[in-house]
Length: 177
Image 1: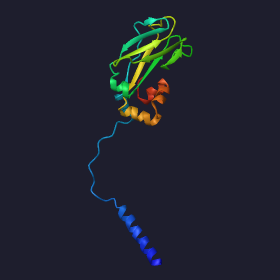
Image 2 (image 1 turned 180 degrees about the horizontal axis):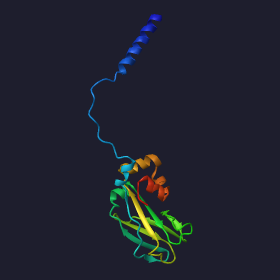
Image 3 (image 1 turned 90 degrees about the horizontal axis):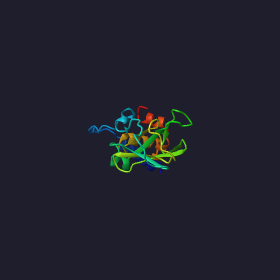
Image 4 (image 1 turned 90 degrees about the vertical axis):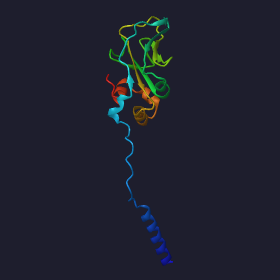
């Protein structure tokens, strides 16, 4: 019995040792990986702050369209589009940037993409919103870029990106405020 156990242990050790042999030819170098945190902003699109030249609609249903050529079908369908507003007369602070949708200055503010290459901002104010003093901006994060994949790994979901503050999004994607 002792001899059989000794041979079994010996055979097991030989099997383990031969399976651990890692020597062999070196394979070809793999492709370069995606850019790190510092290279992410090359694939994230963002607009400058802008004010509407005029609002269309009527009481409780105001809107204006803005040209947004970066909002392609791929970005809209596979990525994340975030929009922000800075409102004159905001009670919390003259420097408050709100992610959309938001309720502020007695109204709901939102955005939608009704066609690729354009973004529409909306408000349900009873009177026409200001054309000067209110500023809008959007950030478009393509879904196939390392930037969104890295953000998704860190924040786990699109909804968590939407819940981030404007400053957090700018910092994450190296966007100048």
